[in-house]
Length: 416
Image 1 (tube, rainbow, N blue to C red):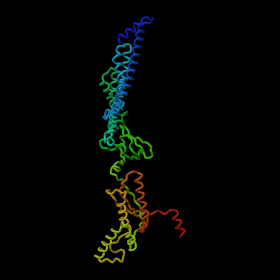
Image 2: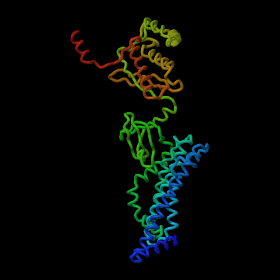
Image 3: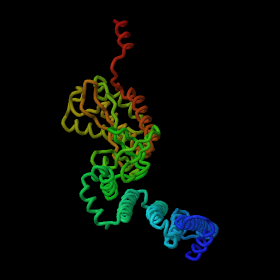
């Protein structure tokens, strides 16, 4: 480089210009040539990489190698080579040495950041693609925290280099500004802590269905980052909420519903109290024809007859002795109906129970779990069950309570 510079200066001697101008011109030509050679070297290396290493890597069966050549790690490393090339030769161009050193510090710091980020992204991609627990244990939040740490370290090194001070001096200044930094990076710090807690306790996974009505959240988790959770609601709107909100406030996660394969049905229908009565012989014979009730009614009738006979009960009076009621038998019928329903989970609770009577009748509650958990299937199964309830109450001489409408009042007045 010195030889080339001397040749340029000797060539410029014939020009009627000052020595200072000659040196600036010579160094400018050398700098331009150095930049051209550096850029040309980069493109040659990139061409060789794409033509050989990248093609060979894509055909490789090794997971790491295949992921490496498809990532941005090597292209970013190639960008660092021209910068190193310039650093080694810039000392031969004294006119621009200090200025170029200043620029190169910033450029190399930027390239180091890009290389570090691409390495972390490669780790995240390999983890998500080839780790079976990646969906349950995402590491994106932790990797984001590492990215922030790297950025802070690189910035401290760059600033200390430009100021000519030790990094410890910069760190001491940052310590004095810790309160301000805590305020600026509050969400990031809280998000980092929340990310570790969510990961350790397995609170939220990508794909979970969560609900937070306060923030309008009701849908699937699409992304979990250091500072926020992204959720796609059922109406296809997207909501982002701070990650720490899931730790500081309550939310509903429906994951266990899908993991266990059973979704709860808990709904009641009100029976008109005036329609509840003791089972007479006519209704008993009618219900004996129902498949779900034959065995129960036969065994129950035998049990009641033995009991009443033992106590010498006068069964001609309905209030004497033990009796079956149409509501009680209907509960048994619905229990058997749920037991034989193909879409009710056979290993989970199936209960038909009475709740506290109100001024709207006797609530008869169905408590069971559907074996299909998707929203559409769940609604269909629940609707089918209650359609059946609405259609069968009359067979038991029961009535569902319904508040009178204007049409009912009109008919009542007309009868009067």
